[in-house]
Amino acid sequence: MILHKGEALFRQGDSCQNLYKVKSGLFKVTRLHENGNMVLFNLLYPGETVPHHSLISPKEAHGTAVAMMRSEVEVIPAAEWYRELREEPDKVMEIALLLQEKVRFMQTRIDHLTVGSPGERMELLTRWLNEYSYGAQLTDLLTQEEIGQLIGVRRETVNRLLRNPG
Figure: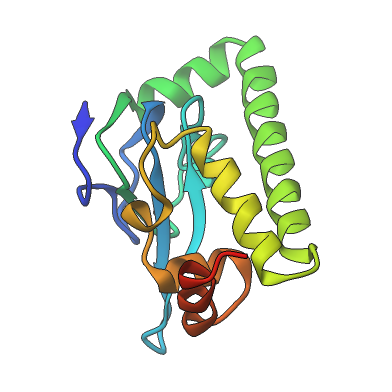
């Protein structure tokens, strides 16, 4: 399945009748809180099978995944996934490796948040995204507000960093 920039792969609260293997592209995952705050809390990249919280058992989608660029995913019916999980013991190791990779990604993201200056954090995010963005600029993929959420600063600080990167 091909999704274009701005199209949703799944939406917060969906029953997750399918899982998805990201073949190419990037997705941002946002969550709308009861108080109306929208928070960007995850990025999905090639090689991942998602939603992560439904890899072992079904659960409604925790957030909304939106394509940041043209992206391709393999659709995996959830019933088939869970049947294979019961019938093929090696599948459990595959899931463990997927989750381990995501934990390592999250550790890297936490490391990026604890680096000294906002400029250094912006540089680390830019370098990481460049690995998957096929040359697209950071600001073509994320809003200043989203960049700020990912590097732990206010939108105004992101704006200043974009104008004066040094």
